[in-house]
Amino acid sequence: MGDPKGFLRVKRKVSGYRPVEERINDYSEVEEQLSDDERRTQASRCMDCAVPFCHWACPLSNVMPEYQDRIFHGDWAGAWALLQENHPFPEFTGRVCPALCEASCVLGANDEPVTIRQNELAVIEKAFELGLVVPRPPKKRNGKRVAIVGGGPAGLSAAYFLNRAGFNVTVYEGDRTVGGYLRYGIPNFKLGKDFIDRRITIMAAEGVVFKTNTRVGSGPYAFGTMGLGSEIVDAGKLEAAYDLLLLTIGAREPRDLAAPGRELAGIVQALDFLSLQNRTLATEQDGFESINAFRKKVLVIGGGDTGSDCVGTANRQGAEKVTQIEVMPKPPEHRSPEQPWPLWPTLFKTSSSHQEGCERLWSVSTKAFRGNEGRVTAVEAIGVEPVVEGGRTVFRESAGSAFEIEADLVLLAMGFTHVVQGGLVADLSLDTDERGNIRTRGSFHTSNPKVWAAGDSRNGASLVVRALADGKAAAEAIIETL
Image 1 (cartoon, helix red, strand yellow):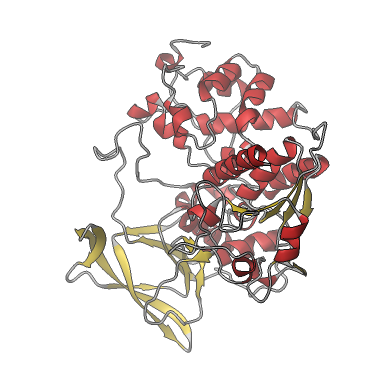
Image 2 (cartoon, one colour; image 1 turned 90 degrees about the horizontal axis):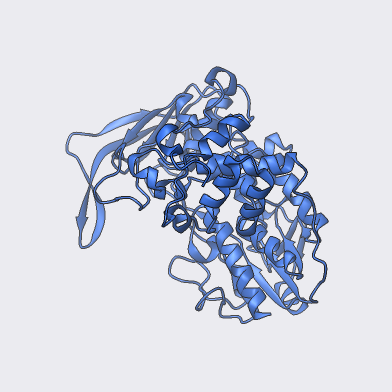
């Protein structure tokens, strides 16, 4: 522990964002970075607690106190060596993770946690700058072959660890490039896609084989984003050709809103909107219907991170006005007694996108969509309050609280429910649970002994860091089994 009193002398300092008037006109990353000296000073705040709850809260079990100490001493190589033992891609979570670790930091009990996420990002970027992150193919292959179906966070994580252990790994991806939600869901202003490409180049040089534009399964529901795959691989033949198949196809069915007028044009799923913008920036938009917020009154339904991403994207596209509604009440700014430290608290957050312009409304439910000549023009809304009935929360409408929101583009950002059903699941004789997620037995095993599942496809939609952790855990189980 480099500075036992650092947490007493040094205040928390975050990196901050580029000025709104600058960043609103581009899709470059909005978050700035501190200097190396400032970052070392921030790392000095780590108390090296007897019980590191930050480590407990991290799905990847990163050893935060140890690498904070290395940062403080300017030992960037040592910090990176510790970080990469457990974490395959710090450059991703360093940009988009909500930092479960920080909520459990002892200093977080007073809302002043160590800047762990930003310190993590500084370590990996310094490692790249120093030339430490280079291809390191395994010295020996074990002859075992694993096919990973789905190139999102869980699939990439599993591929990373399996390849390091000497397995021959092939990743099948139905889209044009790998990355999944990292590439096609998260906006470039939060995660530049060059960072994904940089990592994929290294993995390929280490021996991981990537087969893109390739769908797995039979019929119209074969796995592949929006039917883009130019090649269809028979799932049975793939099963026979590999020692094991790992399905990491994500939770791919967005929640819908069964309200009158839902059929009107101009009401679209948030991920379709976000994905198209990312594809446009990558010149991959051919074949997709245009969705643009230019000079439109945009309503985002859903108050989570995806909704926030829609706000930032709509503002950059030149929306006339952006409104975001959420059915839940406005969260508190500080921990409630029901969510004491070191638990993860539900708190009010203002993202960089919200700072750029957005009216936010809470405790609002959508009653109906209204339109003109087949296109949406307004949303009928009403205030609600949550009540518990029969052990579950329902939302009771508040008398006299009905109102209307003008909107000619409505983005549904209400999360995801389950995997896409059809060819792949049927071809491999897989069971699914009541939510449509692939059912596993014990750990990652499915009803087919040669087929395993990991990530959102078995757990339901969650965080990038949890998908990475599940892919890592699946890889460890495969290594032990094979």
